[in-house]
Image (tube, rainbow, N blue to C red):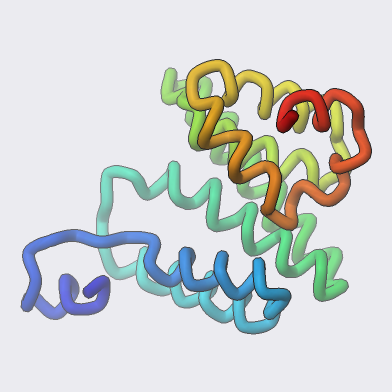
Length: 157
């Protein structure tokens, strides 16, 4: 359906379908396939304009950085995570601070090894979207570096 929109056959604009497929593949340990899906999403986003583009890019760069990191492509992962956080910080400066993107930024901080910023972001996201934040934080691979932290364990308790 995402591609059908571009061809003019559908009237619903869908963005993020490739990213969701990549997310599932990452959860299954298929990081090479996930990277390809994330790259497909970037290519798709080049062809359409969407109001949530920057918000989605934070999550997409974060997920790409996580998969690249697990594959050992550390320079590429660092660049993806830096890009995610640059976009996030720009959004916050413009007043577009909401829990979903803050959650994604917390993932990027966690992947960079910045536990303090990651935990602060998760706690802030949980203030308004607790169930969402906790459910995802329990299962997503970007959280592996926080699993033993007492603050994290209390948060997902």
